[in-house]
Image 1 (cartoon, each protein chain N blue to C red):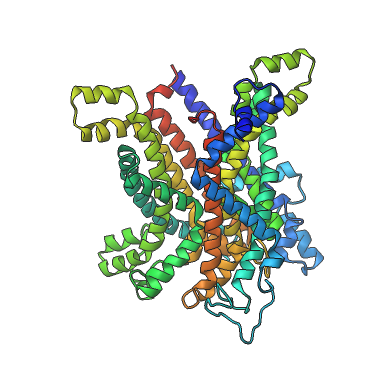
Image 2 (cartoon, rainbow over the protein chains, first blue to last red):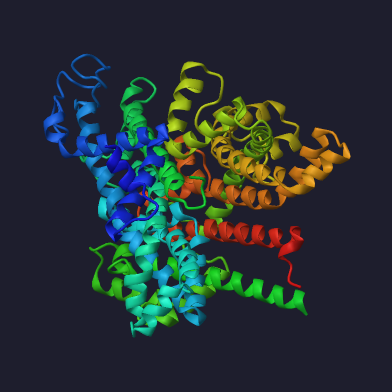
Length: 300
Length: 338
């Protein structure tokens, strides 16, 4: 164990692999020193597990309820979070809803991050009028009200979870472009880039193979920090009836449903909101921890 | 010369950004729907009606001409007629906007009025109780859905405790007792001397405004803290201490004054954010503002109203964004061009 530690923390790595592993190990050590960040990571991992094994974990079916005897029951041993107006077990719906939440978050990240990366790196490396045009477009998008724009997009595309994802992705790439561009500007003058250029690499190859991989880390940190915002926006769209459609157990839509009887049966709306809070808090803590661990400017 | 060029540049940026907003809303309203005519007349309309509407809307013209017409109309405040209210969209917006403005303004007053002192305090006593409180408030502010917190607050403070007025802007009994002058209920009631109505309107306002205030407070206090920490580490603070100035004077007159420069931007941006964030809050509190207007129109597929509302919010948002940018340049002499 100590030998491994010494090998990983070595000042003079003998191979690329050792250097790469050593760097990740150092980042991991500084990350795990932050207990809140670890708590965030554990919660996110738990969420993933819950989503994976939703069928096994949920005690009742998420969309079928007993309308005769099970309507709007308060929390009890049989139904930990009570039941809703359709007699459905709220806990089971929350468990299945975690799939939708993760689906939205993952899809938005997969859509928005590459767009931002591409725009930012191309803009930073090319410079000149390309840079001016791309950055102006980015600024225009940054100056827009994101939620309202997402609302209008969904209104035009029609409600539904996929359209909500597209709307959120369209409005959330500009910060990634900004970050990637800033990173590219610091890299583009580096000696190794000149060396690659002398070897005859095309600009596209330089951007895709030699610049973009170095920007990925900071973009990932920013994406993680944005995850909570994405979850909240998706829940907001669901709350307004523009996200996942019934009977899908989307958390925002569940709050909207519980709103009708919130004065008497408060738990119907309370439980999904609490779930959203826990998950976005976890993503916030995880993002903060990642930023502190990976930011070279922070003290090691 | 420099000032004129900077002004020209600024105007160009405003125009370009606004054109971008118009292009996006045009794209949303006219290009994404498979057939905007069907969206208006429905799929059971006879053929000649469809043709006529297509003609009226100018949809048989090339796309760039349609966009030109759209921009021209939008600049004159012509957003078409709302299907839901049967009024011109612009009339509806003029009627609903003051309610949103009132809510967001009280919200930002709470947010900045409490957030800045809290942030300063957190920075001065770093690692202390207030510092931790500011951190926790920030985390919660970034993690809680605003509509859910509003709903829970409504249950607790209105239904269970009865401390505040419920949904809506004013009780039914006072609905027509205040003459509409500015559209800001509190101002109108105070000017008319209707203090009972004022109190009632205030009791309805206090919960949603505090809620919005909390979210801006979470952001403003966090930013104030980091700006203040930055300033307090500067050498001029050491110099001021060496001169023997009192700590109060150093913090509030020297450090905060410099921290105010970026803070103005933060406050302006969160004001813009509140105008936007009111969409969800207004829905929860049935607050008859622009946000509720947009969501109601959304649920009735009233695209004219949705796009008009989006354009107005977007305009205010862009305006505040660019205004804060200009203010920053004006306040900070270092950013002036030499």
